[in-house]
Image 1 (cartoon, helix red, strand yellow):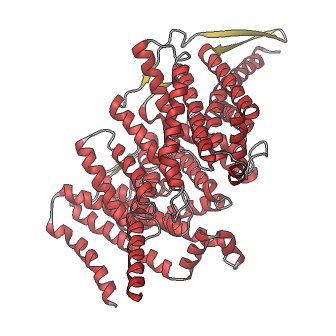
Image 2: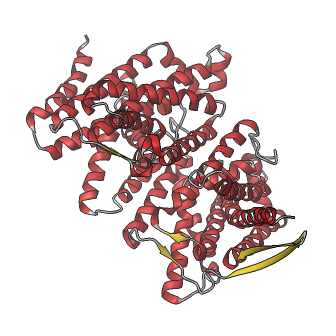
Image 3: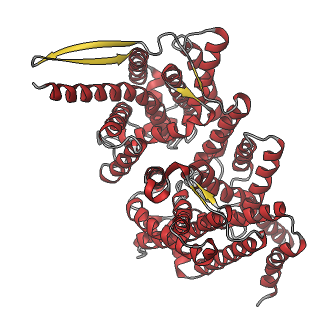
Length: 317
Length: 307
């Protein structure tokens, strides 16, 4: 392993040690939420950032994952089955994604984005109205398996690590290059013999699987969901996009930076201002789009690269 | 005709009437969106939030100064026009020029704007549901039809009828404006081909300001008209943004008469669906029609929009 990748592992090791340093439930809760949003941001980034298919409806997958776990527990499973619950939530989300992809990948650009949003809203309405399965608008409530937050911390940490690893691996292998080709020019990719529908679907399935697993984790951890929370367009779908854009779409660490900033900012403003704490987040988004059009990580990397090139040119001259 | 059949007919007539009246308001919302989509080629995901702002202006004009919602249109229209122009001038235009990985930064900017507007309203006016209690809110006009020996009695809600009429006048004025005035022609030219329009000496930047202003003013008018018959709260924008893009796609992108048809179709679909299929799924019908139209008739119901 090269020195560079060893240095890259240092922050990961540090994050692993956090529960040993603090037992404060509040701090751990913040870290758990950050890690959860890192998973969500990274998953959206695979489809939106790398493959260029902007989805406004990822809450569909989050909600399906959460409800899979919720319905499982409600029908008699113990919540301590959190482990394979995540897997099952992810798989259920991937099945739904296969259908949504089958319908929506006939469309491109904004039409794709909006049709995913529409189907996600339809799923929310199903969750509200299919009382026997989902308990309707009342939602599902159960007592989480562990009282210690440390367990959840490590579960979501593992999820985030696997997620990051899988995405890195995919992006380094052939499908990853196909994804980038599709983002840059779909017609061109098609003419070079790439089955664009197949690879867009692959990207969506991976993205949806991890989003669903994150949803299942959310249900396990919070112990309560209702359709308005997990299928929420503004609170889940849009926030996944904003987290990614904030850090930088199509960058390795962008979603993580965005997620941590998002949790930090919304927490500070929730404490200070109370209601309407998303106001500042909206302002932040507008500012980021105007001043950091490729996100914090993306824009800074661009600037450094340009500076280095300039310095190189000067040295050569 | 048996009384049962007459009763069924009465229900159907009533459902159709309420669908069309609601559809008139939806058309007004869709017109603004379609105009913006046609010229700027972006989806304005803050469209519903702009309507929410107009609804609060109308609400406060009524509560503080007893200005009738229909009269306050005269305030709402110019105010919303100015708001729209500022949004385009100071937020969207600067972003248009930036070089980015993803082409949808402007759309995401409207998402941010929507968040700002709805949360500002939440901070300033709290999450309480409010309404504009005009004296004629529940006034109804009846129309009795004699059909095959039975009397079918249909009712028209007075504020809805008034709103429908005003929406019609506004829509017709927009057609005339686009068809007959120089500015209207410039807007159409810019929507058709921005570069060619610029080469013909049209200040396309100014046209985008005017277009967004008009779009905001139209949806603002819809908000003012909706106030006497609906309630308002800070988060009301989201569902209406969804309706707005559904209407626009139904009509065909950038197709102005199509947007009117799209509004009426959505109004009818919601009204018929909630009575004959299921009230709980009322909002789903629009989305399902939307996805079907996108796949099978991507140029809109009239087949004239841009695919």
